[in-house]
Image (cartoon, rainbow, N blue to C red; front, side, top):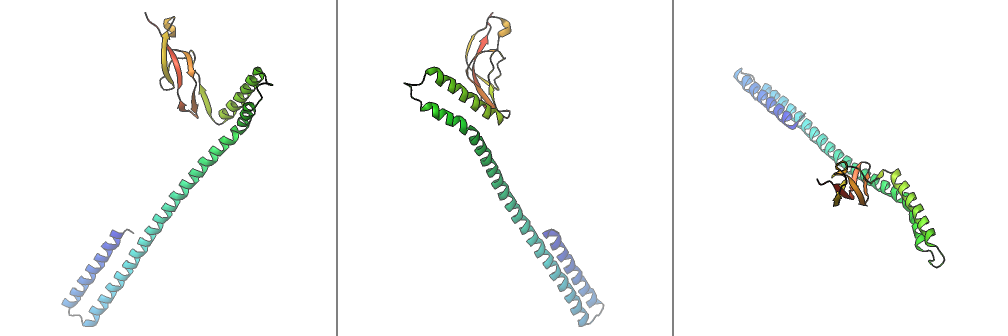
Length: 194
């Protein structure tokens, strides 16, 4: 029951009690009946005030429970984000270890070909780890230019009208993560001139 409903009931009971008292007085009832009616009205008012207090307490408890729920939800969200980030970092630790090993090789003893092969292996390992969590490269060679996924950094002449508006080169790969663009691909776009 809302505060206004309780207040309306208190007013109604008081009006009834006042009407009863004046009716009783007009009917010539004695003082004892008036006292009894007043006591009944006081009892009803006290009862309604207790109901109002109970409703207010209930409202305050609900507000406190909602606030606790909101805080708990925020804490759980923060913890879930942290766990997700930790998992991603854990997945790239092996490739980071491999990079560290190649960064500390003796250039006098190690051939350049060996270092290049090692870096390619690390790149594949890192690519595999990141793809497994939803990272996808945007490499649009020979595809139509899409401003939602690509950033044109230059243009060049297209040899035929069929190639107009297509990507000829990619300066920098773009990336999406679970369908959301993280970085657009930086590309050169072909334009056909008549």
